[in-house]
Length: 270
Ligand SMILES: NC(=O)c1ccc[n+]([C@@H]2O[C@H](COP(=O)([O-])OP(=O)(O)OC[C@H]3O[C@@H](n4cnc5c(N)ncnc54)[C@H](OP(=O)(O)O)[C@@H]3O)[C@@H](O)[C@H]2O)c1
Image (cartoon, rainbow, N blue to C red; front, top):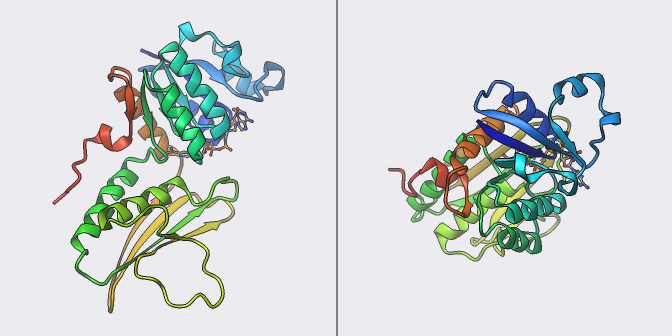
């Protein structure tokens, strides 16, 4: 039985995880950390659901001894503090929050150096498969005259753009082509900008309504093109990935891992 703390426990992903964990007998939610979580604010359903779960506005009020692992889906500023707590108390962590800047990433690396931690901007198992497909397609198409463009679509509530997933896809293409990343990323086409440069990876970001999460990678050649598309239908795919990640991380040696480490997908698929 893994005794779990969720941070960002009342957000969209935090709520999806709470729902998903109800059918996971290996996990027990023992601590819900939420910056707006005070018992008096909870409606009757939530009060019932969280009965027996320790509630905390931050880890300052929380008891580390009751926790085997931490799962975070929050915002970068808060996630860095949650990571500091995990590091200080030696608690394995799965980190799903996206949108970190370089300074925050450096802090994560510092705080998490002595604990096993899986950090992934996209916990979907299929999206991680797409990372490998894109890497392989880039290698195979190296001799062709092919332009790579990425489009991502998300709901109106998403805070960061481009998505970390779109950036990761661009990074994979850039690395395979030995191009400098992120310098080759182009995201501001408007007006008389002239012809597309050869050494360029375009990212377009669309936002609206409750569009879930979609990423399309286009390899556009002359007379033909390939499009690799991943569409998440619900938060279920991330929740399932996060549960697998938690199972996997709990007994790892200290280090920062990602989903590709967990899945053991080889770099070259064919
Ligand atoms: N890795 C993946 O597979 C994956 C999948 C989906 C989303 N994400 C990422 O996960 C993160 C959360 O996504 P979401 O859709 O759940 O967003 P969300 O509904 O906006 O939830 C974010 C949560 O962060 C917490 N938060 C906000 N402001 C805070 C503050 N000042 N201090 C402390 N906590 C604060 C809040 O939770 P509390 O009120 O409970 O504190 C809030 O509900 C985002 O970065 C998103 O991109 C990752």
